[in-house]
Amino acid sequence: MHSPTYILTVEESHDRGDGAVQWLSERFPTARILEASTLANAQALDEKESIDCVVLSARVEGFYTQVFRAPVVLLVDAADDIEDLPERFFHAVHRERSSDVETYLSIRAAMATACLRRELDESKQLLVGASRDAAVDVVTGLSTRDRFQARVSSAMKRDEAGALHGVLLVGLDGFKAINSSFGHDTGDALLKQVASRLSHCVRSADGIARWGSDEFAILLEDMPRTEDPVVVARRVIYALGRAFTGGEEDLYLTASVGIAVGPANGLEAETVLQHADAAMYRVKHAGGNDYQFYSEESDRGLAKRLVTESRLRVALKREEFFLVYQPQIDARDGTVVGVEALLRWNDPDNGVVSPLEFIPLLEETGLIVQVGEWVLRKACTQARAWQYAGLGHLQLSVNVSPRQFRQRALVDRVGVVLAETGFAPDRLELEVTESALMEDHRYAIEVLTNLRSLGAQIALDDFGTGYSSLVFLKDFPVNTLKIDRAFIRNIAESTEDRSICAAIVALAKALGLRVLAEGVEEPAQIEVLAEEGCHLVQGFLYARPMAADDLWTWLNTDIESRIAHPSAV
Ligand code: C2E
Ligand code: MG
Ligand code: MG
Image 1 (cartoon, rainbow, N blue to C red):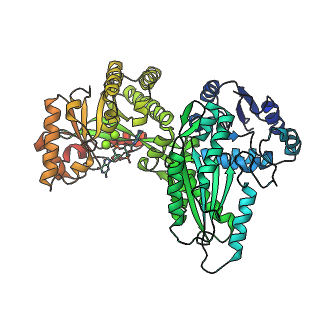
Image 2 (cartoon, rainbow, N blue to C red; image 1 turned 90 degrees about the vertical axis):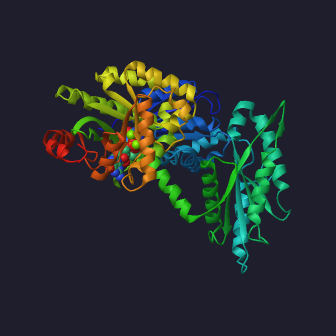
Image 3 (tube, helix red, strand yellow; image 1 turned 120 degrees about the horizontal axis):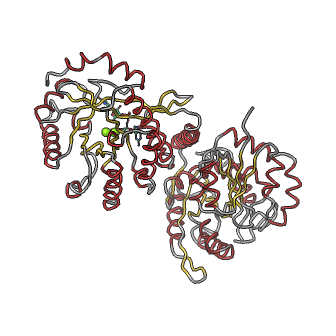
């Protein structure tokens, strides 16, 4: 039997009346509908339960769409034409967060059923703005979306040789926050000002329309010059970037502009508009306040990224992550002093994926916080088992990403995992990068000190590649410097690289720290490192990262080869 789908709805204001729970339960009779009265409660529920879908008011800040763990977050805007709902939901989900396709499709299919009819009649009173066939948007006085589409369509159909039609979609960054903080009257007044400023950015013959709640569209029909969309986009960004006068305070917005040109980017109006929309989305995704042309290539890149992002959201639940361990060795006698836990993702479609490909995405989406804790728990549990089996001396290194490091709860979470797994804290080494420490060095010192008082050790990973200030280094309570592979690679041939390693070793010694060389692949590198006084090494020369069982076998069978290896002994 399938476990039921959990849908969580947040009714902070009464945007959608109080019928949301009833509405959802009618449509999803087998689902469990939970209701939270505040976003904070909703977040707490989402942390605790395995929620499949969160339904929020579109007026909440974009930030909130990111904090929920649920694979699907739907943004519902009561002000939007209810007839458009399924389509709008699609946009919302696609825009704000990628979705777990199955759950989403089932919700979308259910929404499209005839039940919507009755809802439609009831909800019509909620609508602000004009009906579907009205020509003018009541708030801004601009053309409506339908009318604009029709105009683009007729421009495209004229099919005059060489005629180019530029479409710009202008999204207001941060408008939803203004609407929710200052109220809808202020929001509407602002939209009017936006409309008026936009009208000054184009020729009178150009088309301009309200495209969505916080989006506008511009048509540069029969453009005299191909660079016109850029000129207009820049003008728009500048015009909307100036202060808006709204009530007591000045309000500020920025704009994200997506550009597509017909027929170069599509023969049908619909395609050109979709492409302008995709370009606008890319600008938003990159932080807004800019413009971009549609490009098939980056669109594909973005689509791929969104798919990966949505897969990563469910990877933890589906147990697709696993750990491998790479030994750290004292080259003088081949002793294994520790192991570094390294994350792998077994993507059902693409096989095992390197962390270099997916960790940045986990980092950006914030998922790294949950995944990082999973890594720590899993690795400590494994290392505890090794301790039982007689490998008590083995140290365990676990990577901590910058975002994890910024998380206030980090020290508590590490403490909890250590307590739960029973792993000896003084055997745990947390690897952090210099860049994570440099963001705010006072905070870094505080966190490192607290981690050290739990008993854990700290290593500075990829040392030499960041922007370490040596002045701060002496203040950071760290135990180990890990020389980045970049300096080891050519250490046998390059006197510069050798000098850098020698300097790092000298620095470590002066500060009383351990030093370990990463990425050792050749015996010649070991020799040089030994001459410079660095004996701790990690690299393919000894062992590649391997599954826990393989490591156990390796530890028990490969002693000879480890000792025999380097001439540095
Ligand atoms: P890192 O922490 O510096 O880990 C060392 C990386 O160097 C590993 O790559 C390892 O496989 C690779 N390596 C070790 N010896 C050699 C060698 O001799 N030659 C070469 N060419 N490579 C070697 P991996 O496993 O692909 O991980 C890459 C990075 O991803 C890690 O660099 C770390 O920054 C990050 N990472 C991996 N697992 C985690 C994790 O659980 N959490 C976080 N936050 N980051 C992780
Ligand atoms: Mg590391
Ligand atoms: Mg490293």
